[in-house]
Image 1 (tube, rainbow, N blue to C red):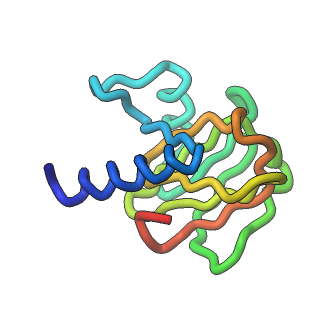
Image 2: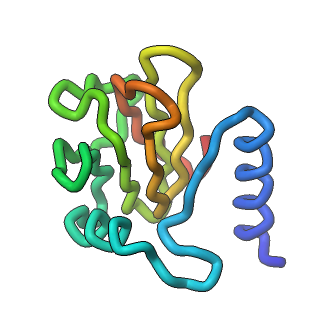
Length: 125
């Protein structure tokens, strides 16, 4: 197992232990669900995009030292992180932050209202 795969497995295991779920943009078989394909297709590198249903409500690309408020994307139902080397922290209205790894798409509905984003300058949270 490569170092990168081992690191991703360790991060995913820790996330599950903390009650968080992270969903890769592609399944283990290398195929994507149609909703993920269309969302990812409308979100170009190096952006992190938010969606309410199939409508893109915002995109962010700046690495920041603190959270940026989502404004129009507050309460988004999906996030797509197209960045290759940068993880994302999402601030939630209740509960702790949610970590999104590089090149991952996550259904946000189980996590409540997302109110802020912080793009990190690292591949892990």
